Image (cartoon, rainbow, N blue to C red; front, side, top):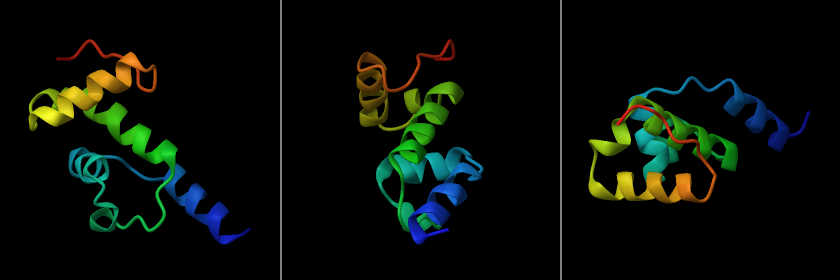
Length: 81
């Protein structure tokens, strides 16, 4: 298995939490130990922020970005707000 495949496999097993999702959304991948982030990991982070409702209680750009991602069909709207 190559380097890229190893990174993708590691990120599939990546356990998301509020801190990690926030850091990934901010683009601070090193803070959570991610060297080469995949688009899927970033989407998972934003979906986590939406599902937990955290995106609505952080700085305004989190909510605006989440709304934009919902409108584009990248993440799925949650009942939690």
